[in-house]
Length: 149
Length: 149
DNA sequence: CACTTTCTTCCCACATTTCCCCACCGGGCC
DNA sequence: GGCCCGGTGGGGAAATGTGGGAAGAAAGTG
Image 1 (cartoon, chains in turn brown, orange, red, green):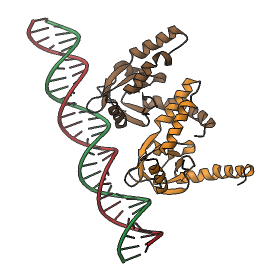
Image 2 (tube, chains in turn cyan, purple, orange, yellow; image 1 turned 180 degrees about the horizontal axis):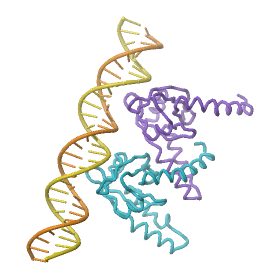
Image 3 (cartoon, chains in turn yellow, cyan, brown, green; image 1 turned 180 degrees about the vertical axis):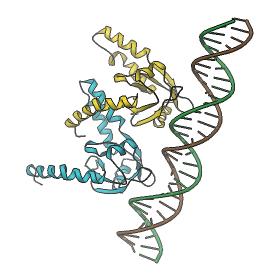
Image 4 (cartoon, helix red, strand yellow; image 1 turned 90 degrees about the horizontal axis):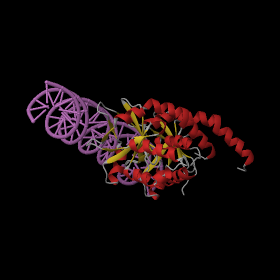
C-alpha cells in the first residue's frame, strides 16, 4: 500500500492538461494501470486516487460514506460519484481536467499536486496557501502538542 | 532500534545536495534501505527519519492521530504528507533537499545535521545557534532540576 | 446529404532539468 | 610515502515539463 507524499507544482496548459509527478506514475505502473480517478474534494481542492485506493474506497463505500441521515448520504454520493472521472495519462504523463472540476478547484495557470497519504490532492496555489495558514498550520500545531513530533 | 546522535556540518551545494553522516548510513544499511524521509519540523528545522522510524510514525498517524474532528484530521494530514519526501542517497551518500523544505529551514550554503534520538534534524547553523541560546539551553537547565543528570 | 467548423486526441519537438557517474582534494592511518 | 575513506564539485546522458500541430471525430449548417 503506497503512500502518496511530496509537493509538486505544474502548469495547467491551455488544453487543461496537468502533469502527474513521476513518483506517482511509478506507483501507477506498479498497479499495471494507466489511469487515475479524480473528483471534487473537500475545502475546494480535487482528490486524485490511484486505482487501488479508489477501489478500496468504493468497496468500503457503504461504510465510509454511511450517514445516519440517509437523505444526506444520497446527496453526498450523488455529488461524489457524478463528479468523479477516470483520467488516462497521455504519453507525457498528463491527465485532462474536466471543466467542472477545474471550476470547483478554481484552477488557472498553475496547480499544486501534493500527497495526502491515501490519495493526492490538486490545489490552486493561492487557495492552498490560505488554507494552510488558516487550517493546516493550527491543526498541525495542535496535534504536535500531544504527540512528540 | 538505533538512536541517532552526534552533530555534523556539511555543505549544501548548488544542486541542493546534502551529505548524510556515514554513521547514519550504517543504520540505513542495516535496514537494507537506501532512502530516508524528510519533512518540515517544528521551530524551523527539518526532520529526517530512517524508514523504520517513518513507518512507525505513519502507523501512529493513521491510528493515534485519528481525530474525532475529521476536518482537523484532514488539515493535519494534508500538511504532514504534502511536506514529506522520500530522499534516496546517491553514490556519495547525499540526498536532495526539495525547494520547499530548503525554504522552510532557511538553508543556504551550510547545514547542520544532528541526531535527535528517534530522528535527525537539519538546521541552518545561525538559526540553530539562536534557538540553542534562546530555548535549548534554558530548557536543558530547567530539566536538570528535576532529573539527576 | 454534403460540407464546414469546432473540438478532441494523439503524436512529436524542444528546452530545461534531473540524475548518475566520475574526478579531485584533503586528511587520517598503516 | 602510499593508501583509503570521506566531502565536494562538475559534466554528460537521459528523463521530464511544456507547447503545438496534424489527424480524426463530433457537431452545426445550408
